[in-house]
Each structure stands twice: as C-alpha cells, then as structure tokens.
Amino acid sequence: MNHKMKYLYRHFFKQTGYFSSHNLTPLLIYAIGLMFLFISMSMLDESGVMEYLYTLTGLMAAVWLFSMAVLNRNATFYKDSVVKVNYIPLYLRILPTTVFQTFIFLIFTVLYSAFAALVIQNWLIDIFTLLYYVLLGVILIIPFTLLYLSVEMKRSNAMNILVFIVLVVAVPIMYLPEDIEPWLQNLLSLNPFYYVINGLQSNAVHAGWNINRLPHDILFFAQVILLYLWMFEYYRKIKFSLYQYLKKRPGE
Image (cartoon, rainbow, N blue to C red; front, side):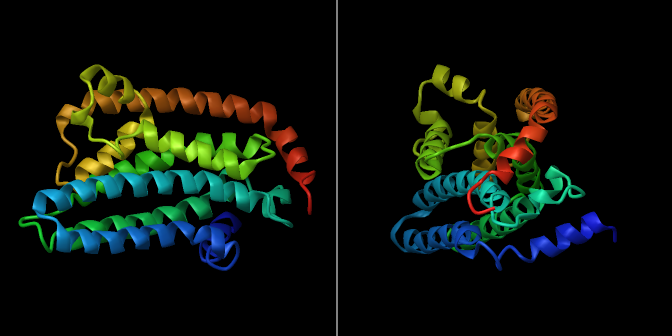
C-alpha cells in the first residue's frame, strides 16, 4: 500500500476523531430524519409515508452534498493541516471527508427505505440505482469543493446557510415535480444537482433508473465535462495562490 492509500485509509478513520462536532453533524441530521420517519409511519398511510420518504431523501441528499464541500473547507483550514504537505495532492486531501460522508449517507438512505418497507408492501430499493446516483453526486461536488476552498469568505457561516437554502429551493424537496408548471420543471431539470437529488428521491420511492432517463444522463455528463474542463484550468491558475492564501489564515 503506497503512501497515498495509507493517507486515505488513515484519515478516513480519523473523521470522528477531529472536528467531531462538525463531521458528525450530518450523521446527527440523518438520525433525526430517521426518528421523524418512525413517527410518520405511525401517523400516515402508505401514500403519506412514501411522500414523506421522498422529501426526506431529497433533504438528506442536499445535506450530504453540502457537507462534503463545507467540511472539506473546515479540514483544509484547520491549524497544522496537511494542506501544507506538498506530496499529498489536493484531490487526495478532500477524499477522506468525501468518502466518509458518502458512507454514512448510504447507510441511512438504505435504512430509510428498509424501515419504510415495514409499512409499505412489496417495497424494495434498487441498490444499483442508488450507487449510480451517489457516484454522480460525488463526481459533481468535487469542482464545487475546489471552488469553495479557493474563495475567501469573511462571514462563512452566513454564506454557508445562504448556499444551503439556495440548494434546497433549487431541487424538489419542498415541492413535488408534478406540482409545478412543466416549463419550470424543465428549467429546473437543467440543474445537475436537481438531476442527482431527484434520481435519489425517485429511487427511494421505487422508481429506479430506466432508459427514458438516458437523455438526462447525457445532459448531466455534458455539464460535468464542462465543469471539469473549467476545474482543471481554474486549479492550474490558482493553485499557488491557494496555498499562499491558506498559509495566511489566522492560527496557522
């Protein structure tokens, strides 16, 4: 095992050791969501539980995507951060947090559907569709994580809240896609975050990937290719200033 894999393995298991109040916040949110799912199962009928599961999965997917970017920023700006060690590339530094947050999100997503199956007959989540959309989410969030690392924010907490609110409003969490005008639904579906979160939501209510989604997949990957072309060019231009900016952070 080379030093890069050792680094990934070591820091994956350190996620609960440092920044525990930050890194475990999504875990707490997922657990609260599971508790409310239990409550809804005793109060709602099957259709009500399905609608709640749809909303819950979308909200937790937004928390998962958002947490990967924000927690990587916290870890990077931590005093004596490994960001100062040149032999660890930036993409590898963000992987432990990304993998850890994805791992706990997957566990709770499966738990949500497993417990919903207790009150909904013939219920089965498509695990391959789940893994597919989770992979798309990880691929999508990496360029935005880099952008988050490179932008200086004086009021980061307020900005984090604003970004999360925008994310929640732009994806089908507070509303169902069929409840909005078709033209607005088509416009929102151009958002790659909308596609990933809606895919996870649809899979949670027993609507896995099918061939009819192929045009949306093509659009998504076209957008991702453009994002990564931008990311590589952007990182080439700002990587040196990024390191200098990080070294000037207070407490380092």
